[in-house]
Length: 244
Image (cartoon, rainbow, N blue to C red; front, side):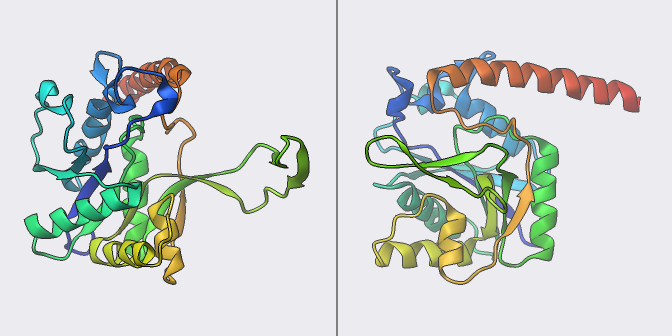
């Protein structure tokens, strides 16, 4: 909870993911004996401070019912929209129908199954101090190039103060819904929720996250995710043995 308000995870999972070159959406591909979506749900529902999940799916999603996923916390299904921000709006609208109290929305990509509990805790603690919300992110380490229309380098971009935006992103649910609806009314397509919040004047906090919180977008990412997952399991076992 944050200031006695419940935290709900919202997971937009209605995308198709053409870059995976697969017969099914990327969230339903598997590694380490579970689908990407199941791993993602496990991580968020495994956080003690998350009350439940609003999962946003395509209306004609044929894969979710087959999973028979069991959640020990409330899990509600909303239907996706044309753009990601439309799906998040639909999820927020359903959230306000199932929870009449003021609450927080932790929006997370369905294809980021490797976020760690320590990151979720750091994000929540940051929002306790910053009413405008916070996101997980990582400082840019690579040299950045801007390309021209012919695929040649046009300039080297200064990477100072540049961050890669990750999810989860955590905001008061009513403030986020208002920001996203304003963006939609202005015909602005926001690639993440922090952009919508910043557009209406909120100073969103950056919380440094781990670089292994990868988003699965290409076939090779599944192999990388499997290795990261195994490394995390070994590390967690080592921590548990150390604290015994």
